[in-house]
Image (cartoon, rainbow, N blue to C red):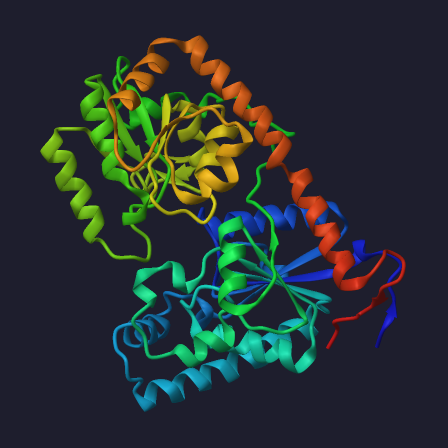
Length: 436
């Protein structure tokens, strides 16, 4: 039953993804979107395979997680061969039907007015979930924002496959009920070229109008616990250990700087195997650069291990870093870049394409290199390490630029515009426009 909605600030919004947990880019950006939406007066609910949000507003369907054993099995088969086994087709369709029923139930139980799909209609790590969402939206004309972080054509491992029919159907689907959002300009152009879909470009953001609190007593032992000597520099690599992060460049940088330093890598390998991690271990040993892998000691929240050692937050790591290395070759946008700016840390950055198109033209001052470490890279890094005033000028300038271009205020303005596109002007939207 519909009831009048006097202002779109009282909607129930359902976030859908394979995972809402931890510090991966999709989970972090969804959390930021939810913070803005709740500040605007909405209520947020969550549908995922793994979820660390309040259980009272969450619906957890284990099979929706991309690393559920059955999803791993399907993904490994369909992205390794050109002919699809009939039993895989049957199982994909069965799971899609199951997910669709659960999405209908989620919408009814929480009286959802608008869906925000986080990457589940872009990257095919759970093909049945993407198909279920596509069919659900098609059957209901449900108002939907599809927030795309990366597409299948951007990952080499998805190119060999036997599911082109499903990819063209659902990753992403083409239908008028969906407002598509991408996080960079290049993705917008490529999406339009491949599918004809026009997308909003909304960059990743940080709450720059509320700077982080200073380091506290808890984190005072961070460097000691990480094995950093008082006279050593802490170079922070705040990323997962995957090939596109270009971590070997950070190792080479430290070796050629010839300063006493350690590289601290905050995240584990993730969902792309362990071969690259082994390569980083071997490369660091070859160049005799101390590298510390601390994913078990740095988590989303502070805590303690079973043997009583401290677990630190990622914020603690940023606070105690001297330099942040960001030598990625490919990024959807660059959360670690924004985080380093937020914590006022100097950056050494490989000029990945999105950085060159969407970030660098804003005037950010970083030590940038183009694919390989040069003598100029070394000289500028040395100068920055020896001149704290220079480093301070850089980070303060970057912070003010980020506040202007990548703040929560920018995100809120974009969301209000999209809501107007979907629902029309405020005070004119019937409550339950998307209700089931």
